[in-house]
Length: 109
Ligand SMILES: [Zn+2]
Image (cartoon, rainbow, N blue to C red; front, side):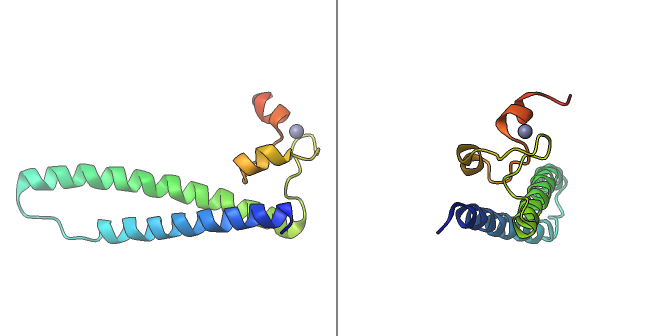
């Protein structure tokens, strides 16, 4: 298996995990609320936490899909800013990295 296949497999595995989690959250939010007021208040707080997780997962899913698109178009592992190859160490740690270590550490400018 070449390196790019390994990164792709890591991305797909992560997508699957997030997909399953996202579906689980949706099912959990679909449960009818209990009638009791105090229970209801607790439940609303829980829903907010779950929705927060859902949005974070959605953002990560978008990033993972973008990485897959870059693999497809042959731009995966190339820094968006300086166009140098991103190190294998960095891609192994962060398969969705869009910038090399130097550019990512350089800040917004
Ligand atoms: Zn760079």
